[in-house]
Length: 101
Image 1 (tube, rainbow, N blue to C red):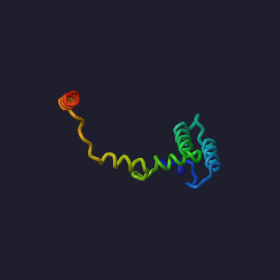
Image 2 (cartoon, helix red, strand yellow):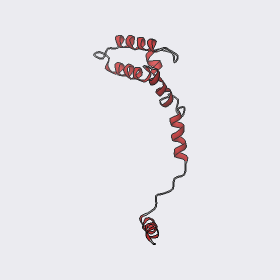
Image 3 (cartoon, rainbow, N blue to C red):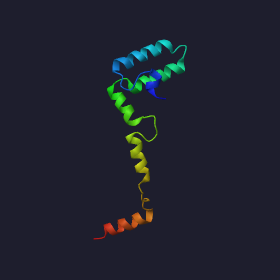
Image 4 (tube, one colour):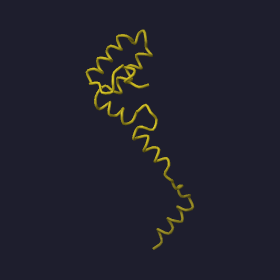
């Protein structure tokens, strides 16, 4: 799920606002009484806790499929034609031609 929704902050929120939202969410769902909710809140905070983490999330873990540059790259990588590796006999023949003076 979207970490911004879990923490209840907008995408343009500052680091301090995100941290405060995380602390408020932990108070409402402590790990002793709400372990599943706590794990979700902690995972959401880890994804967007600072500018670098937010950049990685925006680049690689976007919620809409096909949005991230990584998914676009992998899609194009899957579409490119790949040659089958040469068989053992073809390798032997190639080595024979290379070893002749």
